[in-house]
Image 1 (cartoon, rainbow, N blue to C red):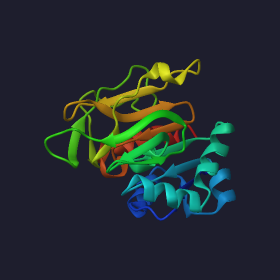
Image 2 (image 1 turned 45 degrees about the vertical axis):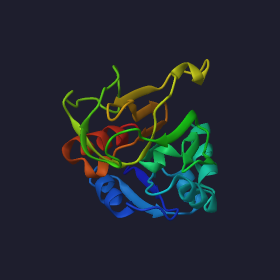
Image 3 (image 1 turned 90 degrees about the vertical axis):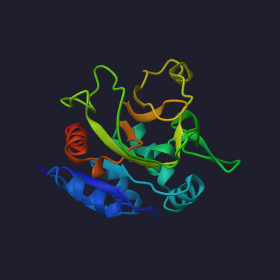
Length: 211
């Protein structure tokens, strides 16, 4: 039976390119803001472009934080991309204004401290061992980033007794930042797999294999 992936439509951008990239993995893709459809799909793709606070407002308008929480409570796969990853943390801080996130992970998303911001282009990652997300990909694989904010000071001991997430880091600017997280049913990438060529397609294939 063909797997079904819902792309959550909450007013954020990059949906069409994501739709095409996911569909190429042989799944049925629906772009939707419907609560039941998003909860019941085999996989949920959460995009995100723009400001943290605006994305959270849009997410709440379709009860997206509840959709994500409901799915994770049932160990149903979720993939967040770019700001769709950032909103999974406790908070985002932009221009001195703090916004509450979904709180799936501890920590803050803040502006990158680097000579050139936004961070735009292709970068290699420090990939964790035993990762399903990056299985079969060469160490030198590069992914495409477009962002000014990221989670940078994330200490895995903050997750308490729960299984520790597998985290990929990217070195850019004064501090490395979280580039991807694999945490049970919850996966997320700061980069855009749908814009990352063969490497991004392989990552999406790895995600679809978990559905």
